Length: 443
Ligand code: UGA
Image 1 (cartoon, protein in one colour):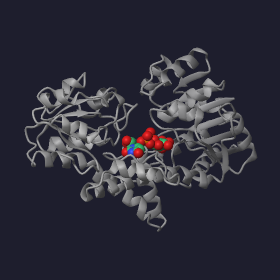
Image 2: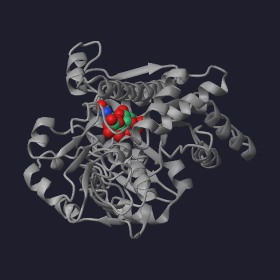
Image 3: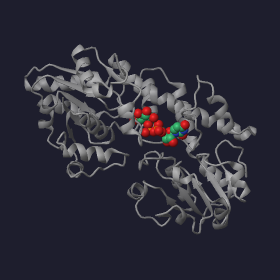
Image 4: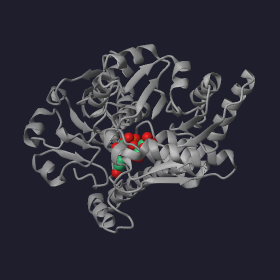
């Protein structure tokens, strides 16, 4: 099948590479010339396990191509995936300008029947806007080609994107058209062998499904973080509570890990956008708004714990920070809890010595060179002259720590663990004060 994908960002690249890998002919389009020429040379601008290999193999096989030539790309594919960004507007609603720009481009250059596939996370009603944008352009040109617009939201997780694309739990397609259903069956056929994962539904239902899924997952996280806060004040231990509730299959163990708040490019943006949609239609979403408020508070927790440990005297202190990415397996720092912490520490006059296995360059790009930030090559280097250690991301490499060596190296024996990686007794036995999430701050 011939497939065009607009957007060489995270979702566009993963979709393009995975579809090319099963034999489709794929062309990925981006307006950014640097991105496209780097990709043509096999340089992948994002870190995602397995993605570079997939892109290199499929480039070499000639099934995957990259271009800035949008008119040619529109003519190429029967399927026209829109996988461009939908950043948060100032008011939190999703900004559709890139999506609608692609729709216009398609309308300006299409010369036969096309199926336009909304892959970007877009508010309910966007498919209709895309349809109008394409129709307007066709009308301006005075031509009449048939086309369909469907919604095909993406559910992949950063760090496990290839796996999620190949073995995801469902493939959702919002459409009323049999022609679209047939084309999507063909497109996803190779990924739909073991059992039928394709779920066809109304366009608006598909659009809402994406937001509802992310909002519910974010709700689970804020919920457990709120209970962790209660546990801290009630003398309970959240890890025991987590096991206790997760064993009920109706609740389950996934997405109830307490921590220093959710980040990334999806949950924060999608929760805000759904709350915004709800306001717009005069149906305020109380739970969803609370999920965001709880998360904002949670992201401040590590700073509060450090302040408490140092009696509010953080000026002049040096804090070792392990983990900058919003979660392991990525170099993405969008809305990462580490950022809230670093910014609060700098505001209080403290110095940060940070290490992350993948995100140092991203951190440098975001914050540039500054006197109060040292980016270390090794996690041990952050401890040199540090008063305390804070952990923001649960990279596997952080799970093994020589606590007695640590308690000798740190100027003050304090560890603040934003991901509950250790057993409090083990840490305390080494003479360290251990501040974690929902564990009674077992100093
Ligand atoms: C999320 C969803 O999990 C995907 O299904 C969805 O497709 C994607 O958003 C999207 O809309 O594109 P992602 O943002 O890559 O994926 O990351 P997650 O693994 O879901 O983690 C999000 C955040 O929640 C991280 O900061 C993580 O540390 C936090 N989290 C997760 C917790 O604090 N506790 C948990 O139990 C689970």
